[in-house]
Length: 421
Ligand code: UD1
Image (cartoon, rainbow, N blue to C red; front, top):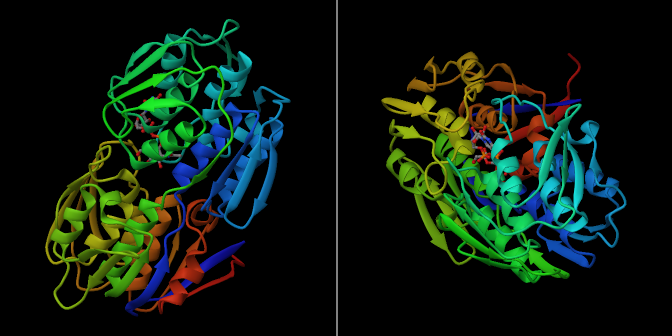
């Protein structure tokens, strides 16, 4: 296994290409199960999570053709409606095959994903929505066994709180349901809009994606389509914060400010300059120190939980104090003790972290604990004096395409080295 070696203290200059969004790619790939025709996806990032989902789609009989960032998926025939534990447990997003399999085949047996490093993450909202659409659901030996022999039917689903996964899952299942489905208190993330665009290109009738109420008029069948995956706003925000911490100027190609939601104002308040340009988002940070600013995570367009760890790294070197409140996941501060190994001054109390900015961080060996937390260590390492080694790189490989190469191309001293410990 590799670890990442970073020599900090170099400003970042140049251009970086933002990859296709992991969280969108995974959902539109699942949408391929809804039709017997080929779905061609472009701008698909080459990530461990994408490869993992391909293993599952292959298990269901999907023909897979990959050429660089273009992926052609054809579920001509569903050969198995079971999504086994051995595959689902490796990546939670796999659970979303349940709705499409049920909608198309009238039955599905999908392993419950189990807990994960950042919290319990139940799937009760997903199941309630499918039940409202007429699915019979039983839990058997760790599996959700669902059937809808007469097909799914349209329903009114009102989510008690916002869930990205449950919104996407219900939206996909409802495309083939009989009648109209209304999703209230739906998630408004750009990935929801991307999935709706893909489904509509496949012949679905989804309206209102990007607002809190989504209406889906069921159709008898979907057909093939080509869809371009939207740029990854979390990757974009992470590199913006890397510039904030290390200094410099980057053009984040294909990026755009609107994908950041409220995060753009927060980053500007912290001292970054963000400008939309025809080719992407330009991020600049020089001269004045970063300012300690407060943040709480929220569903889109609020500040994303997936940028909370990176923001904490940025605040570690800020002038002043920053209070961060995590409201989405219950256990998402595992990066705090690792950042403290680099000299950050952080006090965690329940869901609140108080970060008192320090003058400098010093490199040290640290351990990645989850996907986004790993990126906070990279950002801290880029701004620290001396050398930082980040082990457990597989977390980063799940969600950040060619991270070392991209950073090298803008002047960072970053290298993958064998982890012999
Ligand atoms: C997705 C993203 C993840 C991001 C999260 C929030 C993917 C693959 N992952 O995860 O990167 O951090 O959105 O923006 O797209 N919940 C329940 N019951 C449910 C569903 C969710 O209690 O049935 C809870 C979760 O435990 C969490 C909150 O609702 O506390 C929000 O989760 P959700 O929006 O569903 O996140 P995911 O779709 O899992």
